[in-house]
Length: 208
Image (tube, rainbow, N blue to C red; front, side):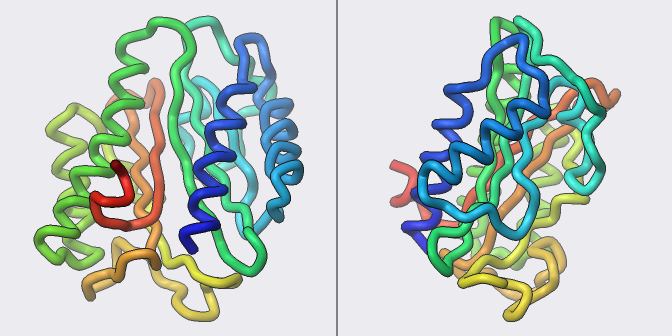
C-alpha cells in the first residue's frame, strides 16, 4: 500500500509539472493518463481527473464543463486512482498558476484541513464520522464549505469494495492507518472555485 501511495504522489507531481496555461482541460486529462501509463501504473477504479478553474467546484461524479482553458492566474487540481500491481493508489492535490492569492489560500487550506483532521484522528482516535465533523469545522473556520459528496473511502488490494463499500464519513469505528483515504474538497461559499487534497490516513512520520 505504501509503494502504491508513493507512486501515486510522484505521479501527481509529474502531472502538475506538465500543466501549463492555455491547456484545455480534456488535453490535461489525456496527458495525465499517459503519465500514469508511462510510470507503469494501471488506470484504475475511478476516472483520472484534472479540473481547471470553474470546474474545481463540481462534485467528482459530475462531469466537467467541456472546453475549459487554464488561464494565466488560475487554480486546478488533480485526482488520480492508479493501481500498482494489485494495490490501489489514490491521491489528489490542488495547484495554482500565477499569483492569485485567494486561489493560493484555497489550495493551501485544503491541505491544511487534511492535516489538521489527520492529526486529530491520530491523536484523539476519532471515528470516521467524527473525523469529517472535525474537518467540516476546520473548513468553516477558514471560510470555506466542505463538500460532503467526497466522504473518503477504504483502499486495499483491488477492488476495495470487496472489503468495505461504505464511506469514511459514515464509519462509526476508528479507521486504521494505511487502509483509508481522507478526501478534502473545499469550495468557495459562493461557488466560484474550489481546491482538493486527498491522501492515505497515516501518522506524522510519513509526512516529514
